[in-house]
Image 1 (cartoon, helix red, strand yellow):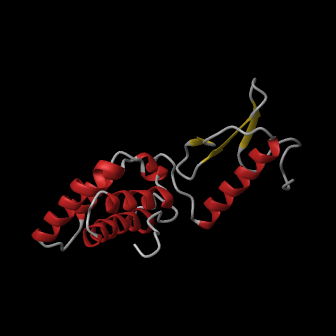
Image 2 (tube, helix red, strand yellow; image 1 turned 180 degrees about the vertical axis):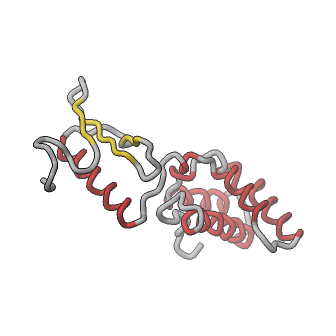
Image 3 (spheres, rainbow, N blue to C red; image 1 turned 90 degrees about the horizontal axis):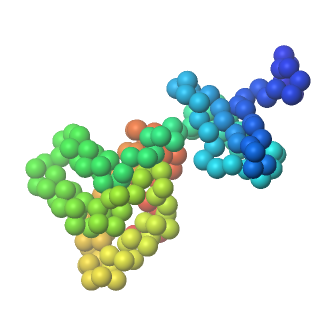
Length: 168
């Protein structure tokens, strides 16, 4: 127990036992808002472990606001294209077309925080299986990967890029 804490009080976050017998973990985020774990836990030790990992993310600067991850990929990518400095008009047209034709129908409605590497791999496989050329699938994948890199590096919406499909 950390020095100065009252007995039975945690240094970071709170855990409460719900009427169902499960445990709910919460903490005050860097933005001052109370955040709750995305799920409840069967054991108190699991809730404590989740809080410890969350605290480590905050102190290391890797914490990502879970609310920001709720933005849909299609909306984020559209803004990404609009706000990209220095793109030539033909490039903007190509990106908008790739987004509309290949990315939006499959992944546009998915929240950024819900995207996974396996989901993107399945999307790419579905494109190729539906007759999309390898070249066009690669262009769409590169656009998607670039959009997601911005979500990771600049906007800090994701902790890592799910667009990591080997040899895509």
